[in-house]
Image (tube, one colour):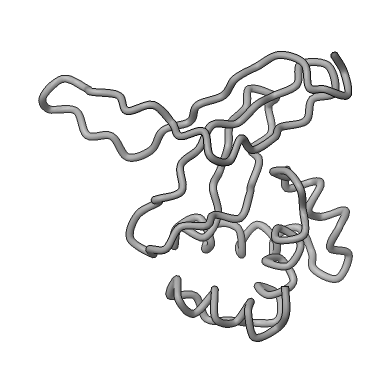
Length: 137
């Protein structure tokens, strides 16, 4: 992802494009799967852990990243392709491989609509399918 593309994406989500945020955004954009904070830290050696975490928190608050709790004990982050800074319109299913512990995006597989009883307000949905990936099957 080029510098101007990063700046445009950040700005369109209401995030000021700083050099650290652009580095974190590029690391997410070049990943083929959701990453943990530790995996991001290992990819980004120029920013300390707290700087990466602050960027991720800001990105999450502006619907620029998804946070995925796949049951592995570590939150995973992936670039969101939402077109809004108010809501996440890019919800999709994720697959967690129980053998290699990797999580994969199943783009194009929408999270099923769930109807909740009156009085409940849904803020997010996390739909994880677990099993074995093609490399581990």
